[in-house]
Length: 214
Image (cartoon, rainbow, N blue to C red):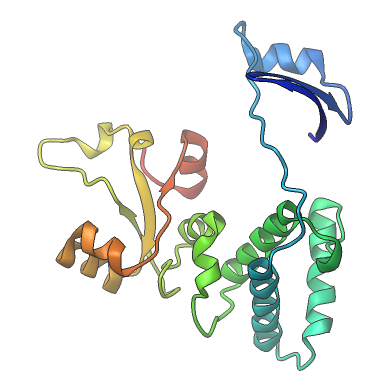
């Protein structure tokens, strides 16, 4: 749900929502306790050069995968699909950074869910949290896009029962067998010096969706 910030005074803010909250629903999810909200400001500045470049690179790769010689046709088709999903027709020229972030998240999932081959993992992709999350979801290596397994960054040591581990304390990344072996061989410190990786920390619901842990 979207809203407009009316005032801000330190830790207290006033927001006017586009539509009224359902009081009964708020009471239901509070479960007899206090209601809490997650507030995230939207970036109203225009789409960045990096976002624009990444968007068009991914669109071109999808067009190539489809055997389409004209990427503009693929771009139109992707925008229509995006509109069907979120109800917004994306326009590069009018997009804010926040708009572009959501659009790129859509493109990333489209690429990974359809196993669209990329000529390389673009540097700009490595700035996107969504890339690393979707790599976990679709079991694709975040470094090379090969078939991947889930790598626990915080290792489960000896004497710890994997079935009883609280996975909310763990961070994850998707690595193919080759890169997973390399990670263990050279150690995490050197591995993260060599590769740019944003580790993914998942809540209970997300781990259940991705079939990770107990």
